[in-house]
Length: 247
Image (cartoon, rainbow, N blue to C red; front, side, top):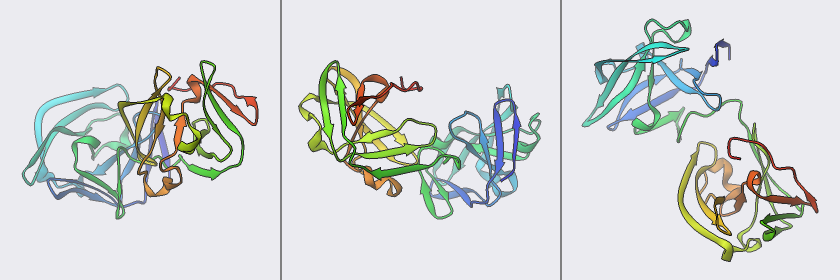
């Protein structure tokens, strides 16, 4: 992959075949997609106009400005019996030369996305993010306001690029009587959909993936905690609270 940068925006080519669907039909299908980091955490897919069903793009007459990408033409996407308002952008006069002639679709407005023949959920995967899940016999104890809420000698440690180690613990090692389910749901393209608990009155301190994506099946049904917001002891040693966007 070659990369270009303008300000905070990074652009790379990917060799993956990428498709997006709306209304049961393919709207874009390419082996020449760009990965564009509009935010630091993950990229968006940009499709060459030649690989987009142009009949699905209806100009709205509106524009949308980006300091780094310039002024975008806004399109409504129609396919089959479905319509996604303002769901596509093109930057014909962008100061970022690499994205001229490309179309960006709003991820959540489309019905489905595929890399090769595997469906991708929630947002494009970052090629620089790796997730490793390792079984361990280390002693992990979780404490909230002086109360032990979990104590395990059989954690699974999840190592994800750019994030602190997460300790996933069997529910039998967790004080479930101190956990209260909340309505919070988050989504991850590497792990799946997580549901949350408040712990000892503190909102959304713990979460679990009941049915994770295949590459993260080893944490299915296990419980993890935000190390940023409570005390974690590993082999009797209090860990420093990490400083992240979740703190």
